[in-house]
Image (cartoon, rainbow, N blue to C red):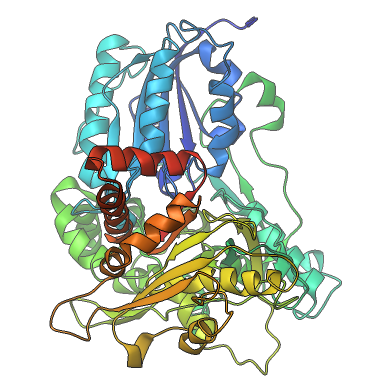
Length: 615
């Protein structure tokens, strides 16, 4: 491979691959901390913004990556990873490059931090030198990063070791010593430009217009500093014809409470009727020479109404702010007691109290701002620090063949009580449940492939889906019923679980109808339907217990080349189902448990073992 550019000394490259924003947050913190330490040249980029062919030219690279699903790469990393797997890359291709990998994962999943581990291994095999041993953040840590405390649980000590080692290797890279008591104010990485009303007004005047909403959404997302993993423009609005396969995922952008939006804008002294453009500045870093002429200030988009921008991109009344939010708030507090409290929350000493105040109670941005009334944060900082309004992903529970131009979802309305007896509701589920079907509501939605590929009609299926995990399999059964009218179909066996028959036996009549003569799940078709009611007896019964009861049937299906599909909670269920399958294979064949485990892994490699699990 021909390389003409010389290695850049004293430059730190920070790359991230993020699906939900956590890895991006960590990478930006690396950028802030290295800037405070005087690093002369810093680049903070998503992996899909950087061409990996330039890696040999870098002196020091920090890579922050999350693991999605069952060990998959984030979307922004897929091209980067394909490049690294090229066979023509030699074992000394990255000689002289120093790197460090920090992974974000969840140890309740079987492939915990799999992406970080394989990236670390591949970089090393290409000749790069690790600065320190890779760091692994765990969502199951007592301070769990899904509550925005992953940097407390694993990242803080890892980052401290990283800075120390980097300084020892090259003092010119991080020339400034940092006093823990120092308080330094960063600059916001965005600029908000206000426009005259006439300049910003769109010729379309009705929010019910598809094109208008699409335009507003695309403009707002293109301006938001949070880099969305999906597309800005929706694949569809849930009032238009749509196409999908069974097993696909529907991502929905939830609406926010009008009362909460008004309260936020009033608290922050914002004019909801003003028109703005948000210009993303360069985060005070240098970037690739090939992009220099296009960087600096982003080309402004056309104006969008301030209220629409907040409504479509900023989660003001659902998500909890991160620690950096409290740090920045402290600089704008005019009441001394508020400033002291915010500084304490932002300090290492105050992290436990911040956890109790913020994460444990799931306080929202609006609630935090109301608790510190002397703070008046510039809108630029709010745009940067308020958590982005994220889409919520749901397994599609219908077949497009059975319900043309419809999409069905199976949603549990989320609600809970905090330790201080605050009633909380899930933003998207409660919003969807509260919609009036008689009113015309446009719901932006994106369709994507999940972890459960649509099976051909000739493939026997073993389905395991307790609770709302039954959602995709409702679509599978509908699809197979349609297919059976024109072609010969393979048998399907389904294991479902819930607490009790009376309260949460989802789609009871549907399953039982397909259990009847010649139904998809019927014995005549070679299928089966087995339900575990976990709370209807003195001892708990789960899907894995029902699977063991049907050991010979499951082994018969596997012998016929069946595929296994598992969907539901990521807590313990997937691991328990896997263990039950290994036990069944071992008992039915007489082979040791290790050999049975190898056989199940062979299924996975052959594309016949699929898991879609969620926290």
